[in-house]
Length: 96
Image (cartoon, rainbow, N blue to C red; front, side, top):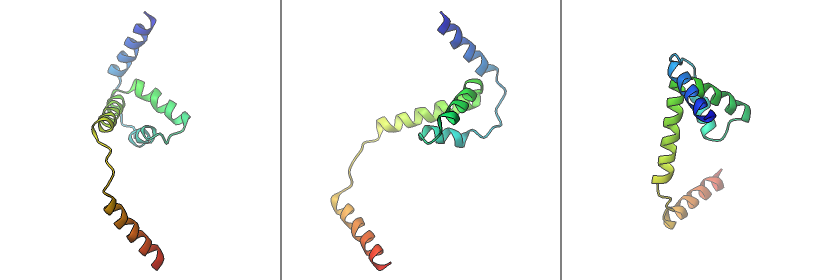
């Protein structure tokens, strides 16, 4: 019962939050990319729990990333393409 109460309290806070004019988007991407410190992650997640626009953006970004990970096939490029790229890189590094 306590978890239900906490869930409803969080939802009420999100719904009652005024529109956010903060610049969380860069921090959001840093966190989703796994490049943020633990402290920054905790701070943003605390903000997201109170701010509906930021929560919606976070939720959207997570959903997009999950969709891309599940829908995109991991295919290896053709070997001749890899060989061609390696040759070009080798010729560039040799001439420099």
